[in-house]
Image (tube, rainbow, N blue to C red; front, side):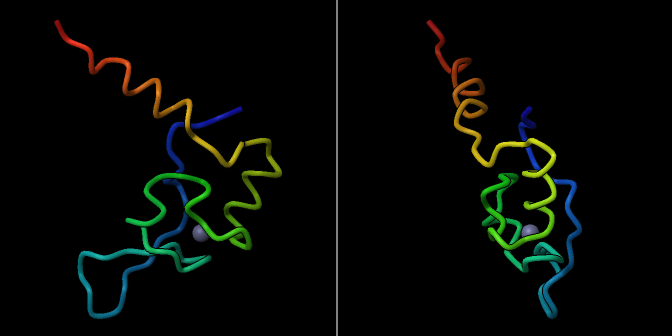
Amino acid sequence: MKKLFYIDYPQERFEGHSHRYRCALCKEETTKINGALEGHLPSCSYRIALEKAGFEPEHAEAHQAMNTSDEVD
Ligand SMILES: [Zn+2]
């Protein structure tokens, strides 16, 4: 069971940075997480909860699926 993007985690804003957000649980910046489950720290309770639920911490196939539409002739 996989999701293309993992963006339903609690986020909080960096103090003093109005356009920077991070995971409220593991404190990794959202631009580093980039919608990927493995972007969270292994100790992140959001990542742990999804892994326990059967979600896999890799998204290579999702990337491939998105890139196949690049070919235009
Ligand atoms: Zn996290």
